[in-house]
Every structure is written in C-alpha cells, then in structure tokens.
Image (tube, rainbow over all chains, first blue to last red; front, top):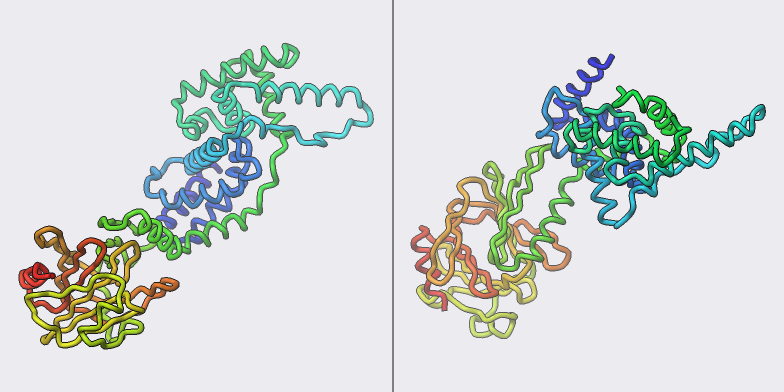
Length: 185
Length: 240
C-alpha cells in the first residue's frame, strides 16, 4: 500500500514538474489536512490555513530541488514547518500556547464520572508539561507523538540529524515523566 | 519504535493525547487545492508587483529582475530598466509590431517654443544640426526631434518610472562607452511601446530600428535610426 502511494506521488510530482497543475492539485488535496495540523500544532494555529497555502505555493516553485524517489510528505512538511517558524518568529509569538485540549474532550462517562475526571486531569497535566518543555524538545515530541511522524521523517521536517531527534525526544520524555508525575507511565 | 522501552507507556499516552488536542478545523482539501492553483496560475500580477517595487528602490541603476517561473516558460525572462526604458528580454525574438501609433498627446511644436513646455532642460545633438521637426508628447514629459533618414532622438525624464518598453530577443544590448556615461546599443529591430503615466497602461507604438539608449542626470535619451553603433555613439557624444 505504501509503495503504491509513493508511486502515485512520484507520478504527480513528475507531471507537476512539467507544469501540470491538475497533478499538483492532487498532491495538495492529499496532504492539506496533515499540513494544516502540522502548521497549527507547531505554532501557526489560526493562521495555519495561510501558512499551508504559502507552503504549497513555495513547494511547487521549489519542486525542482525535490530529490526524486524520496518521500514527498516529509519534504513538504519541512516547508510547512519553516513557514510556521517564520510566522511565529515574525509575530514574536510563543508557539507553545497553541497546545490546548479540546473543551469537551469527553463528557464524563455516565457509569464512571470520577474515572473520566481523573483521566481528563491527567491529560491536562501531561499537556501542560509538554508546553513547558524547552522549544526543541517540544518540537520533537509534537512531531513524533502528536503528528505521529517517524524518527526519520521528524529529522527531515525539523532539519536535524536522526541522532539529534532521538536524543531530544528522549530528553523530552524524561522531562515529561519528571514534571508530570510518575503515575503517568 | 520506542526510543527507550522505559517510556513505552508515556509514549502511548502522548499518542492518545494527540486525539484530544484542540486543533482548528482544516479547510476542505479541494478548497486548498483550488486556492493554491489559483495563485500558481496568476504569474502576471506578481511580476508586476515585483517590477514596481524594484523601480522604487533602483532609480538610476540598471537592474535585472528574473521573471522566469518554473511552471511555464514566460516570454520575458528578465527585465532591465535604464534611462526611463524598460527592456523586456526574452528567449526568442518577439513578434514584430506591424502597426504604428503615436505617443499620447504628441504634437508638433516650433523649435523655439519647446523649452517652455517641458519640465526638464531640453538638449539636442550638436552633430546633427537643426532638427527637421520637434514634437512634445504626454503632457510635456517627452520631447522628440527628427532628422532626415529616419533619425529620431527622444528625451524624457528618466527618473523612477519607465516611459518606454522594448521587447528584445537575443542578441541582448551591448554596453557603449559615451565618455562620462555608458549607454546601451540595441542592434536589431524591436517592438517599442509607451507606458502611460496615469495608471501604467501600455501603448504599443511601432517596430523600432536599432537604438542607442543612455542617461545623463535625470534625463533619459534614445536615439533611433543611426546606421551603426559607432555612429550612434558619435552622435550621442555631441549632446549639448
């Protein structure tokens, strides 16, 4: 399945390079939701839509530098991450503030209201600890667990060596356990 | 997948937390695709914005703007602005202009009355003697002098915004030493047009012959119809 997807991406990229905008629209449609979530969680939040559009336009213009045969997804997300970084820096905004829990994460289960309340409280504390992480460790954690990217993808998206992703993720996890309490895991 | 087995539970909990995050609703994928496509299909206004921004910062200097875009071969690959003239360079010879039009508001003026009707000091080419006729165009922003054998000498305020545009294919302009200044020699016939002061509209004028362009101070000059670059340079040096 994965290799089929890659082939399709590859063909869409080849046609896009020939100026076929319909082929590029396929790529945009395929990755826009993930790109949006990436921009939002890395700090763009309500401006994620603008960031994503800008990133896709830039990606098209730089498609010539894409290494054919490699994965399009992390290459694109790196542009999204860079655009987001530029935006938050230009706004002087703290990118950690975008991390929030949904209001009605889950209404207390009728049969176990107390247990639900405990779970919600635990999630809130864990997220608070993620927000308090040093910027780089937090970005590693967001990519690895909130966007569920692999270590290799995270490395490409954040522009770090894989070893750095491993060490920053590890330090982040250690800190989370420290800060959010041992009962977390 | 785990970077460390000791963190398995914590990792699982973080992955579960991802589903509880408050993330703005993404716009429909088709809408994003359509918006991106619309932006990629609209290269012309983007190029125009670049053009005026560059004009604003480069008053006299020769500037080059690469306007090539990967999504399609644009007819214009670079724009040079010099002496109030915008040179639009392309990869191949442009279609010739087959019609002839005048600069807006162009009218003949007795030689002795020109000075009072334009905003810059009017000069002439001493080596050519009295012109056959003189015209003033576009509300006094342009003066043209004509001599026999198709020699035409235009002068205009060369500050900030271009007055003329020329479309060129190879060969590109040659730099010419005119003593204190440098000019550019356009050796072939080329389409010539005029850029209106108001609104920036463009008026195609005619197919121009070989032309020398140069600038002294704030005034731009173009001399059309000289038989060779050497002769054009000689005439240009007689500016007085």
